[in-house]
Picture 1 (cartoon, rainbow, N blue to C red):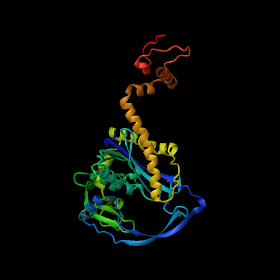
Picture 2 (picture 1 turned 60 degrees about the vertical axis):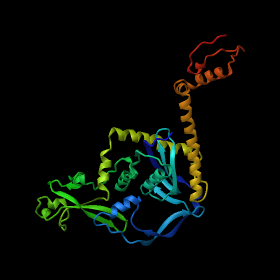
Picture 3 (picture 1 turned 120 degrees about the vertical axis):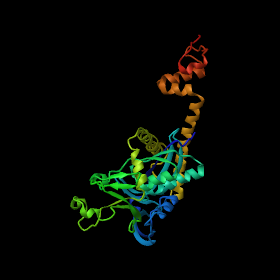
Picture 4 (picture 1 turned 30 degrees about the horizontal axis):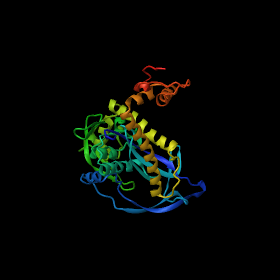
Length: 360
């Protein structure tokens, strides 16, 4: 039923059923520290040169919530605006079975949640995941590297960053983990830099020595106050680069098609047919229960269809290929065996494929 060979994961915003008049801005104290995607990834970063864990600071933030349901969060992303919850779900592409569903406040970031969401399924279900397709919102170096640490091949569309080094003529050598400038000079990996205000780590690549001082392109390459050319990239740029190499390959295009079918399609079906247009219960646990019931209903339908198609392949073929009125008329004749003339039919077993003769 589930093989884990091809899977898709995505998040969807589900509004809470609360009045607009109940929205309220509140100030809360939050701890600000290093962004944590996965425990194994945090340990790997800690072993790199230049790593210094920033001190935990307590800051005051203003968030929007509802007096009716204080556990929901506010989202403002494109056309999505309101208070509600974020449903993160993973679907197996073999039969469309939902293997995991986690619920968070809507103001949480999907890319920060997906790795632990997948890790939890591998540990609890003993599920072996080989390929996972995600959307463009997950295109970060940490997600690419986290998938590698989990033993998963990720397929993620690329984001066109405005400060991409290739835009200025720089190329990357994955074997040496080095950038090459247009003049042929190498910029090897130097150390990790931490942005204390955001908690993000960046890899610093820079030219060694005073080569840049004698370069003829120095004036157009970087600021005149600088000593040497530097490039700040993702903290997991090698994995980020390897993930981008898979873009537009046949496997990538196949996984993107399946992502549209099973990820976006599953959310659409749950919202349209399984009472998930809005979260009607209060609190994160009750919202999780509501989402799990909707996912369970969809799983039961897809499991029944998968089992039925394995037992009666000819019947599933006939229902797919033959127009519905003719197919159901044939079913009626086969099961009832009565014609309008009240004569009993002696029908063969393969009537559902519209073959055989009728003896009056």
